[in-house]
Image (cartoon, rainbow, N blue to C red; front, side, top):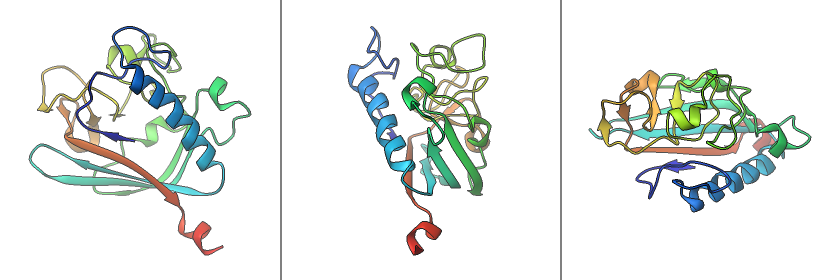
Length: 177
C-alpha cells in the first residue's frame, strides 16, 4: 500500500457515495491479499515516508501480520499485528496493534465516533490514531486536525505527508530456513 495523490478520499469497503469505488475495492482486496501472504510465515514491515521538504524517515517492525489469528478475517476485521519497532520516524503504529481495520461503513474502532469518517481515511484505528496513512492528501502543513496522511511521531497531527509506502517481506529467520 502506498499513499500519494489519490483521486478521492478513501471511504468505504462497500463503495458508498463520496468514496472511490476503486479505493474501496482495493482496500478490501489488499487486506485479503496481505492476510493470505502474512499467514504463510513470519513477515516484517517497513514504512518509508517523505515530507514536502524532501526529508525522509522510516519505521520498521520486525513482526507484522494481518488477521494472523482469525478463522474468518473478513468477519474479524483483519486485525493488525505489529511489534519490534526500529527506525527514525518514531513509533506511530504500535498503538494500533490488535486493532481491526475501520472504514466509513465498517466501524471497528474503540471510539464513540467512527474514526474513518471523522478523520477521512481507513485504517486500523483504536481511539482514534497515531498514524493515518490512508488519510487525505493535504500537501503538507494543514489547519485541520489529524485527517491527512499522518505519522504523528515524525510530523505531528497537522502535517500530511507527500509519500508513504508500506512494504513487507519475510523475516531474515524465515529466509534462512
